[in-house]
Amino acid sequence: MVDKPKGKTEILVDRLLGWCRKIAEKIGRGTEGHRHVVRTFRKRHPRISRTIVVLVCIVALGAVIVGFTRPKTVIVNIDDSNGITTTSYETTSMRVDSFIENHQIDYVYGQDVIDVELYSVVSDDMEINIQKAVQIPVTADGQTQTITTLPVTVGELLKELDIKVGENDIVEPAQDHLLQKGDELFVRRVTTDVAVEEITTDYQLRYEADYSMSIGKTEVVQEGSAGKVQNTYEVVLIDGEEASRTLTETAVLQEKQDRVIAYGMNISSGIPSGLQYKTKISGVRAVSYYFSGTPRGAYGLPCTYGTCAVDKDVIPLGSLLYIEGYGYAIANDVGTAIKGNTVDLYMEDLRQCGAWGARTVNVYVIN
Image 1 (tube, rainbow, N blue to C red):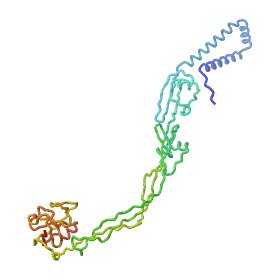
Image 2 (image 1 turned 60 degrees about the vertical axis):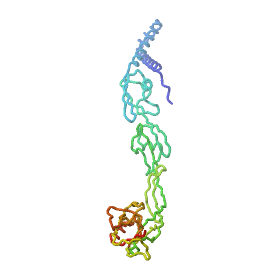
Image 3 (image 1 turned 90 degrees about the horizontal axis):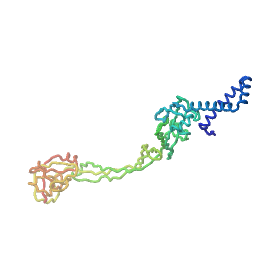
Image 4 (image 1 turned 60 degrees about the horizontal axis):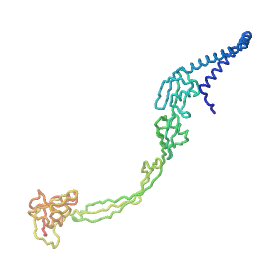
């Protein structure tokens, strides 16, 4: 329990009484002759004796007041953890607590640290050092609390708050960081988990050349079916939220099966039995060609296998043709290089183009 601080008047009276006691002691230590003279004087002149005592007290009180009201220089250093601010004061305050109150010094009792006693007497050229406490928001385990503390390291504050930190947990700032004004402290809990998922793998469409099949024909050799794969992941959680996952194992539960289509590469001569036609054009130069994408010919149809480009002055656009070795085709396009008995045959891919190349065939105009 702390006694109530004395006021200025009480302090002055205490000092004056103390001084008077000292004077009395000195008088008491005088010779017997001196004491006899004093007693005789006080009996014969009581009023004068009292007046002398009052005058002595007034003089002593004045000396004390003058001593305490003379301005004194006090240096105050305040460390707020971001820097030290030094200020010089001229004061007539007699005690440190009065000085702090009178000059509105930035000091909070019970939080900040001061290196002098609050009830000590202010002296000239006195230096006072104050370490300010700081407000630190601390977030851990889903809760945030604001802690008032003197500048300490992150690790020291966590220990004081009894907040345990796991081996994989993330602490920001680092535990050796000296906390200062404006800092925030975060403890992020890091855990790991295992996640398993099944995914479906789509089959691919694959073409294979068949030299026993006539060019232009196709056949499904194998139907496709999807596969199944099981992936195992190590999942890293930060405060319960997924931060990352790493694939640790893959197991094939069901193999996928590609869809395979065979396309004919056999170039045959002759025409189908009983073919009816209007005109036969002999010795026609037939050249294979292919464009990626979905182009359309001058006649308006998409350029696909079974269409060709012609000289429209020889073969009208839209005519249905039978071309030896190629099969049926519609005159769908024209070209600046196609003159006279020349046709360009559209192929399904570059491999068919290579197999056909350029050759001379008979063309039958059906209609």
